[in-house]
Length: 340
Image 1 (cartoon, helix red, strand yellow):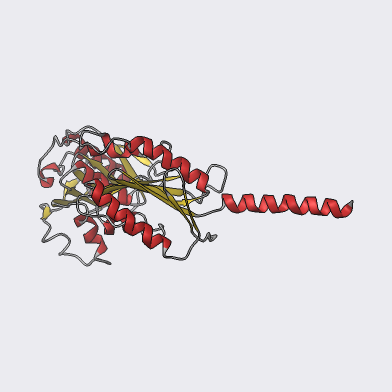
Image 2 (spheres, one colour):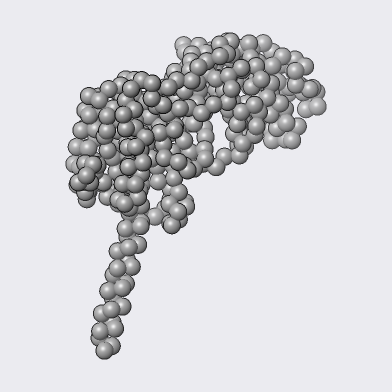
């Protein structure tokens, strides 16, 4: 009898362990449909991955026509040069310009300073950078030293402006309403509106400086007539992604920058390909291990099929376990799970 009980207990433990292993899986799942490649990185189970893929499939079904939500482009209402949007003396109480604004083009961006990495410059080029203006502000309350740097980037389109903003965004950020949502983190404040990305840096952390940064942001935002909006393509993502985790990218380099934790390799984007991604919580597991969902829209079906074939072949050549969904043809690669 004891022997039978031991067998039963061992069987239950085996089932429990297998169940836990399934929940703690680490799957890369990918599928191609129409002009889209979409999938999941770090999915906990193939079941959860299939549910995500099915939800995306519904959103992209018959949406490869140019009037679909994923192809819609936001209009641009304000077209002023960035330097025209910089607040003048007196617009912010007690704060004045230190000197005349400095402007930059693609040929001169950040050439007047030492950068820790070329990435600090290249990230803007990968999102369509066109022009930038910056200026420092000082206040007699803090002496004659400039304490705030305001930078306004013309990124060409609202999509590009959101894209560079998404590089700096992170899950569950602290927002400040300045006519649109602005992220406040440490000594920085970031927001995007219309085709502009705005970065404000406080050289010291103090209440008066932080208030002036918010006031500058509000003043700039008021001059940009474009209303706060959401990139239409993001509507293709399944609902309930982690706030602040959504990303927009247009090049392989940008994809690798905004999703640094994704498994290698990843799909290769072609010219005119755009992509989005977002993180989702594993509700029944440790929320510190979210999974990522990505959607790539290629210029046509042929380009998507070619990129998917290359990605699939590369994944399956890595000698890792995989399985195929018999109904959709989606593949699930079982990556090795490693605790942090």
